[in-house]
Length: 448
Image (tube, rainbow, N blue to C red; front, side, top):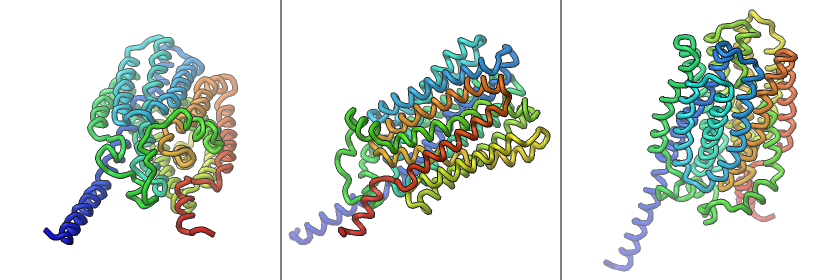
């Protein structure tokens, strides 16, 4: 074989390897995306079932709103701490194992909840569930940022975040039927068996990074950079936790915005079935259907927010989050002021509120990933997660106490004020986006 033919042969072999590697990227990206959507939806089956079971538990055991509010608050405190600790552990672990194990153990705890009869029992086991639930978000954030590049992260993250609404819709629809037919305990048992099966599905489908299946970093595949630094293949260090995350003011802006956002988000999450049944006078099945509409609208809102931030604002999440949270405050004000007896109008306003609520939640995670780095995304979202679940803790016992003493009006005033404060902190990041996008623009523009 001549030197020329040898060179030609080697060149074609190299091209073939590159083509084979990049050609398999679409398959793996689709596989990771649908698996994380289904998997995180399964986490919601054994999380949001508690809010559906709450009215039945209160009726059977005579619990007050403050009692069940404290169960929700304990869950939120444990979940928030778990998001930070498990965020760091996730950045140093294989997402495939981490997420699958968390879902399996959360489902086991849900089974135990069906056998409870005392407030202490429920508080301990639901608090433990908060820890296992916190093993879901961070590995998803790691997977999405390793398999999708910054310039498409808004739309793809939003697509993944539809898992929240898919899971919530499933449990609102299924939970209302199960409780009406078989009692509140069935809302813990049946979803748990689904989630156990899906934990094995997750383990089969997921792979930690493109490198694990012989592919290059996604930034090279999508052309964001010609060659990514080898450091992205390494695990995050404690020093980077401090410099990239804890010393980053943009991450803290998102953390405070998340805390404010999670007060209305988790307030609705925990209290909506009870509010709709008591204040609006509808049955639990009707309340479940109204909340299905709320969650479907949230799915659309999240997708729209991600797409707008990518396509209209070129990767800037601040403007979209600001506008959406102001819209949420207006929608909640109208829900509050609408008297009982208008279920269709209530459903319409809940749809609008759901649309505006989920967009900023999706964007908060994306912006946090943008402002940190994909190696630190687990611990960065863990920081914002701690603050989020401080807000969630307020939404549990805090809202329960406010409503018990001042009525639902007091709860809605808090929801509206915190939505507006969250909009302010989103506005502080108005012109910021992922560093790799700015660096790419500088490469295109060239030196001045």
